[in-house]
Every structure is written in structure tokens, then in C-alpha cells.
Amino acid sequence: MNARAAVAGGSDFERAAQVFSLLSATSRLRIIGALCEGEMCVGELATVTGLPQPTVSQHLNLLFRAGLLDRRREGVQVHYRVDQKMRSFLCRAVSALLE
Image 1: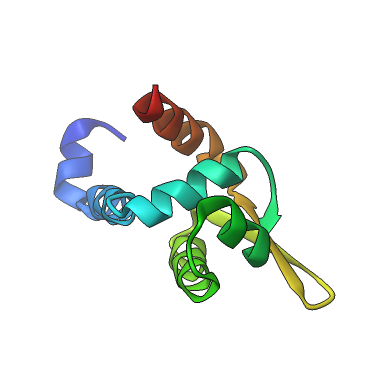
Image 2: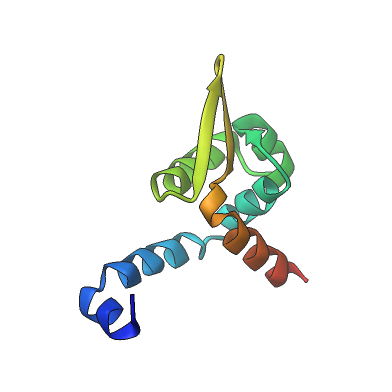
């Protein structure tokens, strides 16, 4: 899609704005940074990030619904990972900001 078509359509920019809005929260960046190291369940993420478990769960739900994360259930545990299509972008961005 060329730039003119993208501006006319707007939906790609709306999606980008949604993603950047989600990334504006420090807690969500911590969670993504941890998930760039590998798949984790909610409890592990709470421990690694120092955030309360309910907060981690809320942020994970938002990130999952936005398509930034994948999840799988193993018994009662839900394991999260960065979506494969978004992994390169998200992990490089978080890494670059932390350098």
C-alpha cells in the first residue's frame, strides 16, 4: 500500500496509534521486555516485573486483545509470549530504548 492510499484509508494509522498508545504505559513495556526473554505465565511476570498479579493480568489482556501477544493454556496456567509477527518490532524497540 502506498502512502496516499494509507492516508486515505486511515485504518493502518489507527492500528498504529492503538499500538503506540498501548506502549505508552511503563508497566506494559516492562511486561513486553520480560516476554522478549521468553514465554511466561502471569505469576512469573508478576515476580519478574515487580507488579501486582492483578495488574499484570489486566495489562496482558489488553496486549493480547490488541494482537501483540499470543497465549496458550496449560492446565490452570496461561502462558504468554510476544506475537511472532510483532516480535521483531516490539523486542527491538524495547531493547533500543533500554540501551
